[in-house]
Image (cartoon, rainbow over all chains, first blue to last red):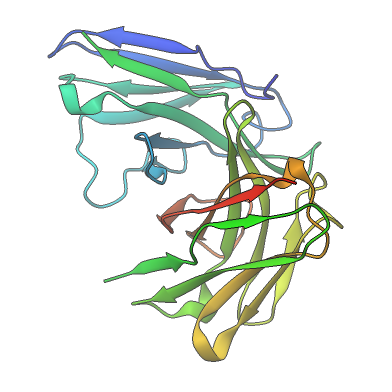
Length: 110
Length: 122
């Protein structure tokens, strides 16, 4: 299993607010900043959030990130059908001496 | 436009060698870390390693150390991932990606290649 724990699935209806959690430990989330990626089938991941809560240019402000202790969260407000994708958290781990990814959360817009 | 263009899909036999490439354009190639990430159907995303083109500083994931070689050719803005002797377990989709910031342990990967599928089968 992954070093970072994410729920395998999440869902919401259009317009709702959804949060996706990422649970880690002191050697990763407790020590470094978290990134979040969005991935659609057969396409490359896209950087959604970096340094816990920063959005790259072009990412809508409906997407937000936060971190507390050894956990992080991605929130999507005003859910849209085009948000249906897989979401991954990622961070450097001091113990494993490598970047680690969460197992991914498949978001379904009902 | 900033982009990374990867080489085409490969089908190889166990024991063969392989090099895949990632050509950068639209930015100062030498001054951004370039990383490689593997995606496998069951295991999800795995970090392979990263290189800083200006001085070829490389960091490998312990899981991939000794299994692959990362390199660059600054003259043509291209990064490479090489295997000397492929195994079936090397099969997967390999992405190159540009990393934000001076410290490869921080920041995100903001520009991604389209991916190169590697299939190793007898």
